[in-house]
Amino acid sequence: MSRRLALGLLAVAAVAGLVIAELATSGSGGDARPAPALPSQVLRGPRVDLASLRGEPALINFWASWCTPCKQEAPELERLAESLHGRARVVGVDFNDTTPNATDFIREYHLSYPILRDGSGRVGESYGVAGLPTTFVLDPEGRIVRTLRGPQTATSLRDALGSVPSSD
Image (tube, rainbow, N blue to C red; front, side, top):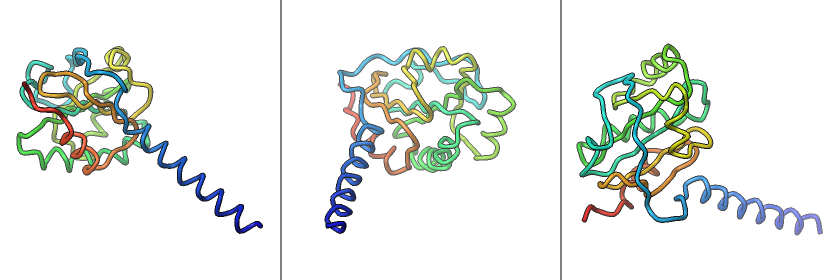
C-alpha cells in the first residue's frame, strides 16, 4: 500500500513539474502586442531602441544583479548572443538596480550584448515584468510574441527564437 501511495505521489509531482515548466515558458496567451519603448540609459553599448531591432527577431531580457536566478541565466544568454551571428538580437535590461552593481554584474559575466538600465522599474512595469529573470521574444515587427519567465538555457532561448513568425 505505501509503495502504491509513493508511486502515486511521484506521478503527481511529475505532472506538477511539467505544468510549472509550461507556465514558466509560456506566452502571454493572447495575440502579439507591440513592445513598449526600451529604456534610454545605456550600461553597455551600443544604444538600441525598438526601431533598431526591426527586421529580425529579438530577445529583451530583464534581470538584476541581486537576482540569483539571473546569475544562473547570464552565461546562457551570453552563449546564445555569441552564437546568433546577426540572425537575431539579444538586449539586456537591468531592472530596478543600482548602476555600480549592474556594471559589476556585466563585468563578472562578461556580457557582450547591449544592456540598458531601467533604474526606476517603470519600463519593466510597462512590459509586465512580475519576476526576474523575464525574457520577451519579439518578432521582426517589434511585437511581443512570447514571454519566458524564470532562468532559461541557450537551447530554450534558441528554440523560442526559432518559433518566431517571419516578417510579412
